[in-house]
Image (cartoon, rainbow, N blue to C red; front, side):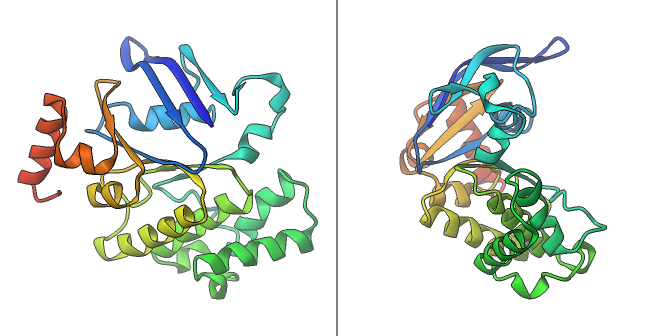
Length: 245
């Protein structure tokens, strides 16, 4: 479903992505792991053109993401993204945050958008907070609303960028449970995470990035239990020493 070939990105003179090649199949969940600064989030944001690469190509179902045939909103309709900072509009109630994209991007009527918003809120157990403002919610609740907002656009691919990083430990579980529910529905996802247990349990495939390259990729059982690359082993050993694995 997603084909990435030779993706390269510089920020100034700093090489952030170094000829990255990756395929993601339909219904597959791929987790990107690695130290901070390894290029994970940049790779994720290149997929839906929040960041433009310097070289290389990205195709969605065989069509280049920069192809004019997508129009202004075609790519955003098919590829949703959720960030660690929630990015909810603080002056809008939960229901209005979620209704915005279906109305603006998909052209739904207010009634249709409202019904859609309530349905996705129910998926995350958040329908009773429809009239609340973001500041009235906990971090975990806000992140679940952010997930609901992304799903309201009916994307075929969902990109998640460290969606548990800003949460207190006791709130991480509820967000991870919500994402497991999305996997059960067959949603294609690419996930940047520092939660190794999450990657181990959820991913069909895990990619370890270092220095802007995918150093190793494998099913989670193989990568976490018997990594082949020395740099992968070093990374996992440090996590184990720090009690994070």
